Length: 65
Image (cartoon, one colour):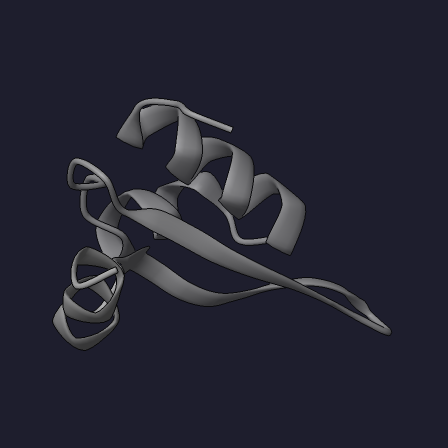
């Protein structure tokens, strides 16, 4: 899904049960071509990564093909 940082932060916080005020201070805006990593656990969703990007190593391998 493509979205803007504010919408991503609001949605991810809601899914993970993080209060919006806490999310506003804890998670800065989403950079271009970055994403949030959500993992479903027994107790619900967990934010496992924020503002994640593809590593340069992986990108270099893809570009050499």
